Image (cartoon, rainbow, N blue to C red; front, side, top):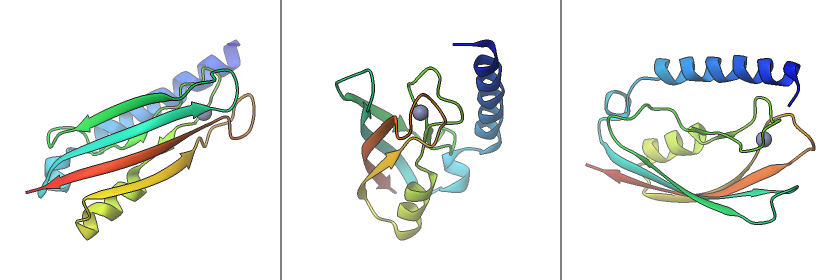
Length: 124
Ligand SMILES: [Zn+2]
């Protein structure tokens, strides 16, 4: 990784860390949500030839921040933003949802990674 990329990446990382802290807690924003489970399958179109499964558990005392980072090292400002689908689900009190997202970042090639996800939300 070259110096320009790593300093840019660090800046983005700091910015996101701040966003996360600013976003507040699930229990504050969505008091009726008892838990969120995101099951996802991460795949890259280059390099890695297999899909990586990942599960993310979000509790009421977690931050209301639903961005998943891309695993590609040179990826700048990438990642998968689940904020839209999740907040939409909560507003409709829907329990499960599936979808697919493509990494938004700049990197070695376009559409270098994507996820398919399943979100399950428990309400009180
Ligand atoms: Zn990426």
